[in-house]
Image (cartoon, rainbow, N blue to C red):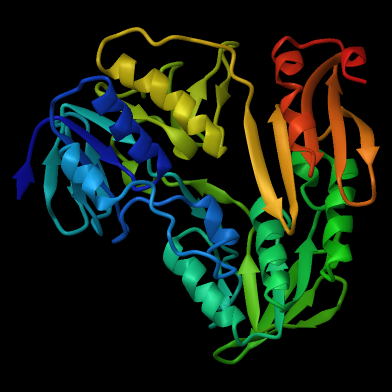
Length: 390
């Protein structure tokens, strides 16, 4: 079966939904088809490692079903895109259907990395989808011991949620501290302190060599010889852009779908947005940003460009956050692990730190300091001297 016409968006998350919404706001009246490999209506992913996992809500839909009907957006759910023919301008789905497009938007997001050497045991999981969150929540209801491998943002959030549910948690990270590669070791130590205060056993500077168990995981063996009991093992070692289906399409992929400053890919009439997309920045660098807040900014650029209009440009200060226990960790700007870090507030749990590079403030990270973090936006946007904020 072949359908045709309009704009086809491949992806079922925030980037896909925001693009469709922005198209209708821009008075685009043509057909919009949203293709997703999941059976659920498009939903928000950040709550999966927090509110959903803790059982506080199951309502994570980005828009109700009525929205898609009212906006005449056709949903093709449970239908993964398997290939793209940019010459014929068609997308082939897993069920054999072929969808023709006038313009195509790639919004397929990320795929969690797994560890190939691990055996396929019950209780070993990743967390990316709503169903995976529900399954982990169910396991946590009877589990006593959990090992979380990887202390990035997802790993830290999962560890916090499982600990809140009363599970004994060991958080394992090969780097010196949690979040070391993102925020540096000094802030990583403050995050580790937060988890230890809540009873998490944080093991840094050590990797995992083996999982043991018959059908279900029973133990985790660390590189230092430690053996940990485990009813649950959560792998949080990062994600990769979901681009396998683009092989042979002619769309250039290099740590994501390569785009220009407006989201155009190297193939005609094909665009990309969100976590999967590597956009060229004002300095000519290819940058792929995985932050939730980035999507709205990209949608406001990509839609006018797709419709032949000019998008307004503004200085955007990147922002993301992570909820761990009762502390919201917020990051504004573009801090790097090797920046000079100035911790200006630290009460033993909450903290505030500015990041300095070449004498200028490039970022701020706060734990439980929302007002002070957001007040730094203008200084960061202006690359103000670090003395202006200290």
